[in-house]
Length: 120
Image (cartoon, rainbow, N blue to C red; front, side, top):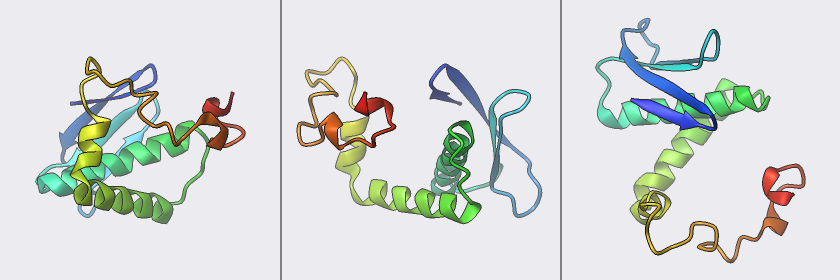
């Protein structure tokens, strides 16, 4: 399994971790995500999302605390479980009739954060 992020292809490895550890992200010497064996699929998915949020925090210098990462993980998983249509919309094939950029006419770049790439 791999997570694609910009130019990176981050391997996701299901492996034995210390007791009580669900997952870990490591950026050095190369980016990798490890997830503990034996987790239920929902917990495994949530753990991968948690580690992706941790990766984003580290790459972009957000310095999110573990508790903040957990809040984002649990909140996003809740949104995805309660809104399966959102997942379908986000992950529809790129060759579909819909243009992902124009699919969101109510969210113009002017609403982006001033320092974000979308605002440029």
